[in-house]
Length: 327
Image (cartoon, rainbow, N blue to C red):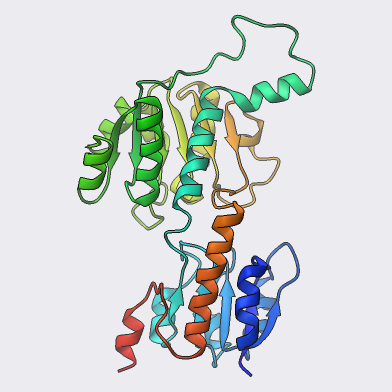
């Protein structure tokens, strides 16, 4: 029977789908296997379920000559060398679409928490610094009628914009490679360049892909273009942001606050300066962490893997050219 290695415990919903089709081994630890251990585990596998924390490169693929499918338990596939997979005829699957609503919820949650200084006020209350009702205490930023800047108006960006446009009457600006008629119709969004978005937005929410153009997209120059009352939110990928520049901007008052669900690296060391800043709210990459969403991710991940085991096209394949190369 075909062997499959699952590099972390995904929801049982997905594991139960996979189990009847293969000899299944699941990595039992909370932290991922080391590269050497992962290489050893997949050497005689036909299928692999990977996570963003697993580096799947040409060397690993060469160590697993029987590998027929890689199913990534994520939307992003930055951890996988797609060119190497295609060259070796290995289809790579991902789990798009099902994370949209949950991720948009977290983007808005972080925006609210950072704007209203929720994190620091909760800590102050717990540690005895809440002495009385203070008319000047923990003053945050108003949301109603303000301007929202969406960097990357894809599915998640639009879902976030809908919540803030319909809920708080925000004006929506956005950047994208191409115009987004749906966003312009549904939330009256206006497409602008990044500099304009940064200068005019009260809230900047990042939803772009991580690629060579967006890596380090937000640095000193970008934060200096933002309003001193601005709130910055990132639920995309950690490397999109120069974290030293962000820390400086928060510490100096260049911007008001930030809310992050992603960092670089992950996990961010507890000693990192961003954790010491009261105006920075950091969540441990929980955007997709609802029961429904993670089960849907597990379902799609399992379906992709099973299809690959039987040589059938994956429902969600990020390198479809692999099928052309087989004919």
